[in-house]
Length: 204
Image (cartoon, rainbow, N blue to C red):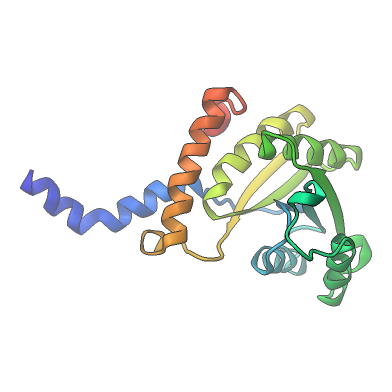
């Protein structure tokens, strides 16, 4: 027992990074578009990462997905023209109108799976065959799982690329948001597997 404790003491950081690394897979590669996974209010970090990929010619177009919730559930004082404001800000950041596309999707349970279905169906209409998927931190594993699962129907290649806001992969266990996200995403991943929303093959 003492030996195990000693080993864990000296190796706990690599173990924690490795365990969390499964939740946040990252792959290199270029694609036709970058998909900034859906949220109600897009984050500065996510947008900045997407724009950087466009400027670095990792992709030609940024797809910004926005969740459309019932009006009564929206954050107070959120402008009705929020999507238009996002478009103007993207142009102000240097993107041309043909370098980004806004896709608004309704919030329907299971949210991540239904988002993937709607977004990829629209991209298939645009003849998109490859995409980089930007997801926040530990949400990446579940996101890339359902996006690849649905993308396979269109023979679409999807590359996972996590971005981090309140924690990093090398210190998540020291940050409350990191611990919360780690536990929550493992639970949600298990839920998706148990309910059949995500196949075991797609989860790995």
